[in-house]
Length: 249
Ligand SMILES: NC(=O)c1ccc[n+]([C@@H]2O[C@H](COP(=O)([O-])OP(=O)(O)OC[C@H]3O[C@@H](n4cnc5c(N)ncnc54)[C@H](OP(=O)(O)O)[C@@H]3O)[C@@H](O)[C@H]2O)c1
Image (cartoon, rainbow, N blue to C red; front, side, top):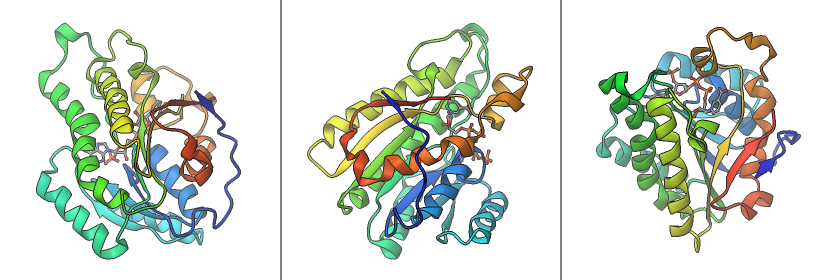
């Protein structure tokens, strides 16, 4: 299902909302953090590198948007105890969570399966699938305290149609699609709506790594797509549940 990326972000339209974004320090994660903060949401910026998180925090605050909070955590090595601490910290500070956006991911390597680096296969599935599973499990109790909550998984076309050489990345996105659908059914009678989103091509590090020979200047910027994330957090988007959403380029 195609949704518009043309939403015009209005200041205050997400006031009072608390939304956690993974991989918020750069790329699409930073672009959506900017727009969510502009719309008045308090963004919990989760990332593995404190230095670039602080840099990104300054960029949001310098614009005069809603002040975010930082949560340094490496999804690859995070344990259930780490996620319990995150749950406790969010509860103590906000008592609820309105949005959980699983944006962080790695490309891993583009290799045929018979040559795929085994360690990198495990790392890719840990960051792109197993970490998001644990994060979701520990944050559902807080999302249940919101009167209108969202869980959004960033997916990709390689998670909807299998393509040679996309290895663990493609497999992880297929798994994310299945995980999100399962969750959307389990949570159907709650206030939590669960969807996946293929944002389409964006001019980020991941795209550059996947297509090193491409002229990236022609690709849409992540900032041109991030208003759609605000739209998906608004009450009007509670009509979407268990959907495979996509943005136009
Ligand atoms: N770009 C595209 O064309 C495109 C197309 C379809 C789908 N997507 C999806 O969109 C999402 C964002 O992609 P992007 O293009 O913005 O990618 P990106 O530029 O490579 O950024 C990835 C983000 O994930 C974070 N991350 C990676 N491993 C992590 C870990 N172990 N713990 C915590 N954070 C970690 C990175 O943090 P560091 O800075 O620390 O590495 C970075 O913030 C991904 O889910 C991707 O699959 C992108």
